[in-house]
Image (cartoon, rainbow, N blue to C red; front, top):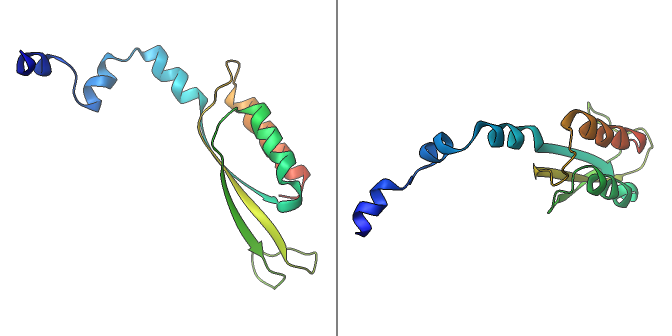
Length: 116
């Protein structure tokens, strides 16, 4: 009985995609986010609040990055070392009214406003 039943149920990812309604697939694609935001450490809480408000994605990836004050292509002009945090937002937004174009634009605007 198990052998016969096992052969009739979809066992691989291709079969799953074939039986998934196209509406569900399009919703998943429209709400999927893969963003990296590089922000100064002193503005981390503010940016995390914006991420919560705009996406409702958890967990967030947090990775510190020290930007030394030295010449080069990627440099900061303050004359001191600045600690940045890479905030990775990866996943499917939990907001029911999520619009990728609008919400990601708000995230980017918030990052620009704190010199990220």
